[in-house]
Image (cartoon, rainbow, N blue to C red):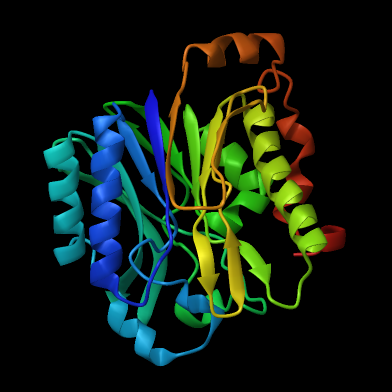
Length: 285
């Protein structure tokens, strides 16, 4: 599987963001990409750093005009396109979603982010309802891709359930960075944790993982980029810097079989002992 991650800055102008992303998708295709992954909420700034109802005007229907444009990109470039966007399901009912579009331009489906944060600089619960369609794996022309979004990346349960649906690759479109009051030392610590947890998902599930982040300063948030791809043993296969970049990586999907035979975690799972995971802290509902 030939994969490209589009790491970019975002401006307040959604048209400008679309144009810049279109050029980067074209670059990815020209380098042989079969799958192109865009960052979380790629066509807008990360507006969740503040509470402002005017941003609801940027929400899109699925299907709708934005998805139609993305379908044209996929068809023109012959790539599977994974594009996260702000979805309006009904007036006042929105999701942090992504769409998966096949290389012929057909819409394979959507995923709605399951875990929604609510922290300083990340006020997503104001804008988004938690996903209600479960974890998804899409059987694309390039391979089986499991889709998750940003805050989902901290939850091993989400990675496990998605992998168990047959994913060869887990993708995590992301918007993560440092608040202005945080130090560079804190950023380094957070970045290490962010990368480590996703590498652990690759190891524990014997699959590939790709995380694409944005870059640049948006209000009080500095996005650190550093998009990366890792293999089934957690090894870093490709990593971006802190500037806009199209990151390319080729995945040997056949290597998944050997890793799972060497470390047979799925064979040795004790599902009879995991019932407590369905309860809250201390075994309470």
